[in-house]
Amino acid sequence: MGQRQTIMGVRGLSKRLSHFTSEEAGRRAVWSNGINTQELERQYSPSRWSHRMNADAVIQAHVKALKAGTERARGLAQTLLNVPYGEGDGEKLDVYIPKTNSLDLNLVIYIHGGYWQFLSKEESGFLAVPLLDEGVVVVAVGYDIAPKGHMDLMVSQVRRSVVSVVQQYSHIRGLYLCGHSAGAHLAAMVLSTDWSQYSLSPQIKGAFLVSGIYDLLPILPTYINEPLKMTEEVAERNSPSRLVPQLQLSSPSCQIVVAVAENDSPEFRKQSEEYYATLSAAGLKVSLEDVPDTDHFSVVDQMVDREYCLTKLLMKMMDG
Image 1: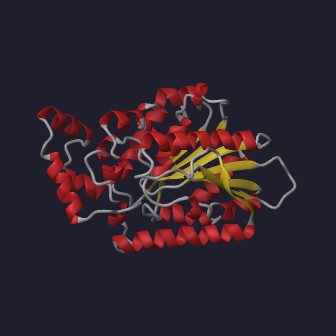
Image 2: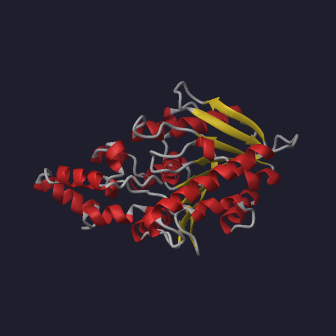
Image 3: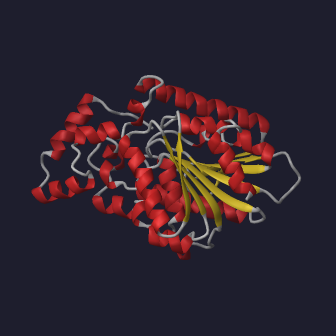
């Protein structure tokens, strides 16, 4: 995730916060469970919680790993790059196809992270490396990150991308989603879609949600929201934790894995634990995977390895 935490940014944010009314301040205290803005920003800065290296280095290592994995995937797969799913410049897919003549294939749609303002589909094909040998098609979704894209648009784009994939690959055996961080949020929003507004209703068999954010309200007063410019209303309607009744209607049989890194921050861990608990209480098929010896970045970087626990769990889900 992008860590644009300059002193000026934080000071500017503090200045804006000083103009809140008492009513607004009260609401924000509820959103943040009484945590002050400075601490919220620390909690939602995942690079500051890695035990492997400093904040800048861990982000650089993350991007390097994703790019290297994607380059490997492009050398192994038949690829269809920049396939449009809409009319916007950013509405493109990259498709990684295993070298097989079979049409009876599973397909995984990967939605990248980056705090809705960083990364792209260009470094998001790494998941194909272990899955191609299993005869799995991998699709990396592009969407318009902030500041060009806003939250409602990004959610709409990933939903439309899923519809487009199902239309193009109607013969597939099973459709699965995987998203990391902001991508896990977007994948959860896909699961919570009212498909009556679309041309079809995708049957999503499984979803892997890795170190995601499912309640957007706590990040409203932080630097993360500066390029997103979300209001309380926008954050509420795009928070998967508030859309579980719709998920029950749209994806009642979907097998969901909520994964979180051991060294994610307490607030990130809380996001996953509470979303899992809400889904479980709603009677959905969900498990919580607490991945040892990982941070917010290595928890997904390692999915390039077929022997990694989450990769094996994803392959087991598709074999089920």
